[in-house]
Image 1 (cartoon, rainbow, N blue to C red):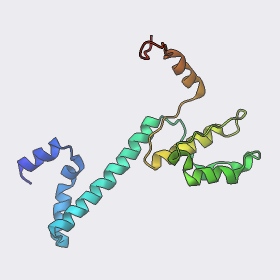
Image 2 (image 1 turned 90 degrees about the vertical axis):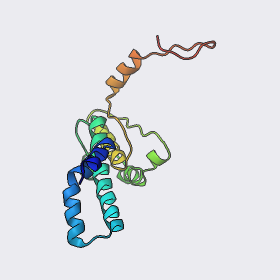
Image 3 (image 1 turned 45 degrees about the vertical axis):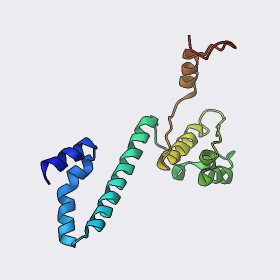
Image 4 (image 1 turned 120 degrees about the vertical axis):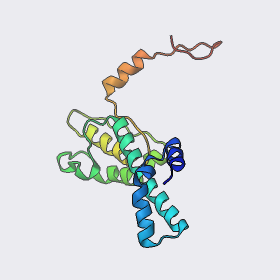
Length: 158
């Protein structure tokens, strides 16, 4: 690959394409790919890599302390939970598509964090972004950013 192409790939930040160029060239030669087939293959591979890395980044930014998933939630230890109802909400993904809030209320050690984490993990895996935050941290954050409202002025913080 000539230097001009390499510089263009760097400029448009196609790092993985740059890293895999020899492998793609070898595959095209070996499989006798047409230019169109090679381009489709490269785009598909780059898309998969980008999507996977994007998910990893969203997961890291979510700051989830323990990555619980619904498949391992201990419903047998939470007798008061309606398993069918919770799984219906989870499986339908309505809480995200309809932009509905899900609030977990209960005593300590009833699975609120596990459920919240599982729902957040699902949303992130579906391409959404989110952030895990404990209530005291949220409360503290809200107290730090009190807004002042005035009928004659634009909203601003002090």
